[in-house]
Length: 360
Ligand code: MG
View 1 (spheres, rainbow, N blue to C red):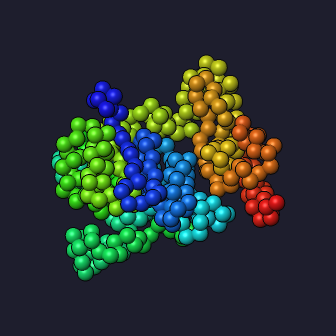
View 2: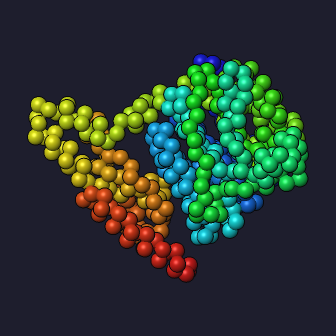
View 3: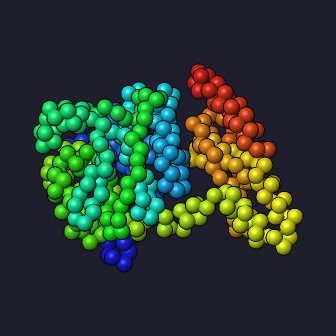
């Protein structure tokens, strides 16, 4: 890719030289980036990692809000557990998830498992995340060195993943980068094959994120490609908080309502009517196959959105009757969040009945 077309971020995944399936997944949705490494074998691991990434994308906040990002990861955990319970994938499937949301040079990070986030700052590589793995525990206890951990027979045993425990807690933290830094997200198929100093060298010398991703994957394959390898590289300050999407999203519902009020001040009463109308409304809508709840009214008014996502539930639209499913495609408007919540509960019961019914 030439510099002229360099968007400032890139990602790729490779099955490697040994495995038959690629159970890794990744997400490039600036300002949100993530990698996931599925566990559980054929037709399980890849479902778990894809579901985690999809749910993260649907549930993620629009700005680098750490608590909301943590909630989105918990929602991804619930989605993996519920999928296994309802016959999608297999029992025992799971996935790592390392997600970073950027806002300028500030990073909100949520992390579970042994995939990693690193920051290259002034040529030096800093690992941002702590592995949730047996060997990382042994290193922390001083029982083995980090060099020994790379070849330890139990190096792939992870101590925390999405998909097993409803009460699973992700590590969530903020980090501060500097303009010109490079962010790396990678699954263990990179970090177990390529030493950190070599990763640092590639990141520091590649002209673009795209070139860095290709080179890192090539090196993992050259080193044996024992596992699926997934790499995401992002140049800081060219992404995060600077895209039109996140700039708009940083404005709250109330800021937008107030802006609308100001713009329409000449017709005062109409503005107040619009504001109070939007504030008193809510709606349910199909978002990526799940029932989502929004505060406000759907669509746009005078080019402004007057709604804000409240929640994406774990209720699959496909579990509801076809008429309700079709209406959810357009959005079902109700009088406020209280009514929306009540409607969600009836859908939840209906969905549970559908999944409990014997399949013909
Ligand atoms: Mg792996």
